[in-house]
Amino acid sequence: MKIIKADNYEHMSKMAARTMASQIALKNNSVIGLATGDTPLGMYRELIKIYEDEELDFSNIKTFNLDEYYGLNIDNENSYYFYMMNNFFKHINMRKENINIPNGMTENIEAECFSYDKKIKASGGIDIQVLGIGVNGHIGFNEPNTSFEVGTHLVELEKETIKSNSRFFNSPEEVPTKAISMGIKTIMQSRAIMLLASGEKKAAAIEKAVKGKISTAVPASILQLHNNVTLIVDKAAGEFI
View 1 (cartoon, rainbow, N blue to C red):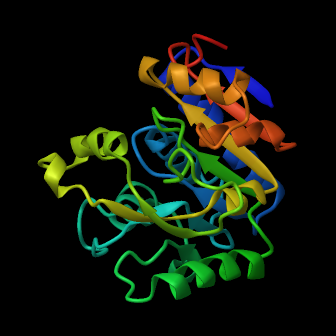
View 2 (view 1 turned 180 degrees about the horizontal axis):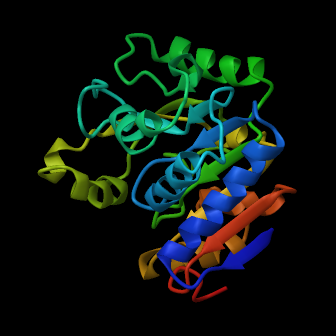
């Protein structure tokens, strides 16, 4: 695992954007796995700047998002579809047909999950997957004690995750209790992984992921077994590594 310690969140975001821009420049039809939440927002802003400077072309890029809340319509401002469109996709020259996000309103969970993994394989697999990390060590919405062998699946969100994500909603009661998430097996099949973490609240999870025993109790610990992981943290998140 390559570990990069940035000075602060802004520095971390720029380094992450440069890594992603390099991937796109080297392979203009890359398949990219994307994440949501607070952590990657800065990276998306930096990538938009690079695009506006006419240094990046996204027209042949395919994307697959890690997850989506189950039961939220794409027009809901808290859906990850809404997040991606407003924070990234509408600002660059992405083709809508190349954007893939799990359908949180599906009536057939099993078929949706199977289809999502099948689309990833049909696209040639993910070249680089962006990950954040939860305070409980989750990646995607793969909560502690999720099997490392699972593909895309429906997840029951833990109380800690619901509480953490409630900052985006009017109240904790509004946070969906389920989500469709790319599975750990699917994530680990990516050719490269970039894990981002910022803030002191993530420091303990990062320490366990990097230095701890590989265990389903800390889903991110499985990344120790991947042969091409870059961890980019700010000083606060990297305090214990």
